[in-house]
Amino acid sequence: MPNYRRVWMLGGTYFFTLALADRGQSLLVDHIGALRAAYAWTRRLHPFRTVAIVVLPDHLHAVWTLPDGSADFALRWKLIKEGFSRRLPRTEPRSPSRRWQGERGIWQRRYWEHAIRDERDLAGHIDYVHFNPVKHGHVQRAAEWRHSSFHRFVREGRLAPDWAG
Image (cartoon, rainbow, N blue to C red):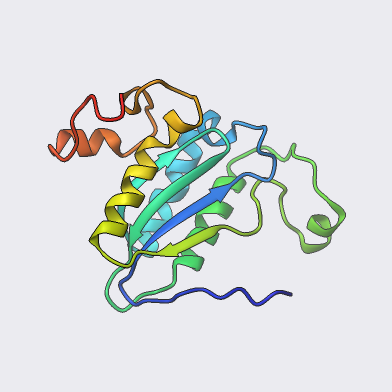
């Protein structure tokens, strides 16, 4: 098994990308309630702060800050992925290796993680998160995408409603 190098920073801030195994599906928005429930349950058990997030049909991006003394984002994502998967019917195709491992075929096994280095890096990743639905052609303006922390940023006065419009 590959030994992936991860940066583990106690109380760190990270950018993540997680994707479905079948990028042609829209499970994340079709079952947004299941994703929200798994996310909330995990956050209650293992707290973290969601700085920014966007959920698209086949992938999501998030920026999290972990609590002081914790660097275990891997456990948190594992629980979210498992919790979401448990809430869906078992209809997805599974490869022989997934069957052997007892895994569902919903998520890609790996995910992208990037440790945020400074305020400029953070601002760039937050913008990337909020612009992603426009980038992928789902909407013309960031404000049109429902499943995004963009709306919280507007309510807080941190972004204009016509940002990226």
